[in-house]
Length: 218
Image (cartoon, one colour):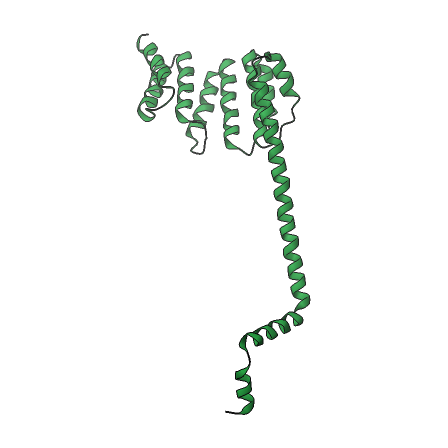
């Protein structure tokens, strides 16, 4: 073995690795700094988006909590609740539900025109449940204004939608109530029995049985 080769073998492998790494860093210093800078920019953008989104969610949650406090207040009258909720600026997240609070209060007051007008201004929410609740309220307004057929069609579409987040037993019961009101007792009884058969643990079972008894004794 040559002397030069023997000396090379005696060199520390770790030292050789360090020297090689340093040389590589020097050679590609510019590209490495550009890459590091790009990574830092990406991280900063991600953090900015995260904090902006978090701030927006927090703001909507506060707004929603305020609206719930107004809606559920035991000291405010209907008109006062309506006035205060009308002043809140809703967004496209959970706070969009505030429009439904408002429409429901108009419905409770018996002002179907304002209830419908409020729903027409509802631009939608990123949450499916809130959008589904809008359809239920639309059906309630249709039923209350003598449009039971359209109300049933709305509820039936919602019931048939596999992605709907409204519970099926609730929808079946609402349809049955309308069917009883419009004289479709056979269809009402079928829907009520479907609740008993498919949803034996339903919280509506007592009302279901009451309606069935009323139908059977007619």
